[in-house]
Image (cartoon, rainbow, N blue to C red; front, side, top):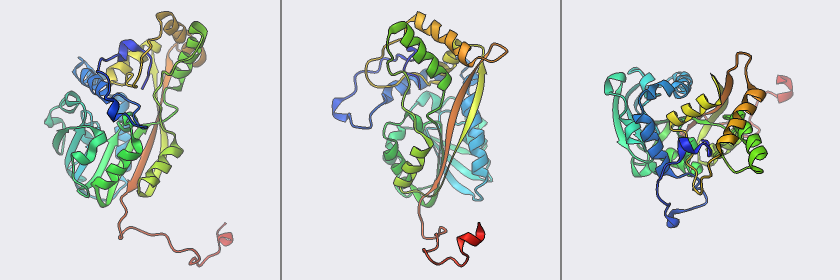
Length: 316
């Protein structure tokens, strides 16, 4: 998420293959995998699950509104299974968990799940190399898609993997995530270093997701936005937790670390601009939730234009 904070994020991953570079390649997927592996192996890694657990709980509320029982659900970018742990056998019989981090994928034992689980170590960007087209009843993704390089292409793969009338339910961080930290870092860097380098990975806006879902071929779209607000003792505690979550820098290209005095200035600015009365600082995680269905002849269809029986003016 953050391009700065090299102490959290600078992970040697080798140079990307120039022949694979394309217009959508923004993140170093190997660096992100290594970050997630280290985070999963970190002692006390469960103590920083609070954001993903909260988002998974809110995703489950939306899932429960869908009155359907699924034989199999595919959890894309599952991590240790934050969403899967909430599933009950009455709603799904089996879950296929896919994640690029083998350590995160196998962090928690089967006994913590109420449904049968199958774990597959694979890259979320290459879904159709893992599963067959038209094979999945439902695909869910909890806070993984914001690290995907080609989001439009990944959404198309998800749609292709679904059976007709299959469900996609996802959640990803939106563009206003951690705006408090971003503004503090930008102001501090401008003051101390005379310029601003990119320190935040690009994140989608709500309108972008609606457009991308439609372009990917989903129907019956629902996109909404929510926020998870967390209070931290100070900026340093927030930065430590981001690193422990595996949410460090994974952008391709040179990684210039901020100087210690710049980070100290950012901490002071953060507290001055956004600090709470009790001395803590807030952090906002904006979450975009999306629901889409693979088109099928059995789905409800809009009436043809001109077939309405009641004038709109009468309704208004």
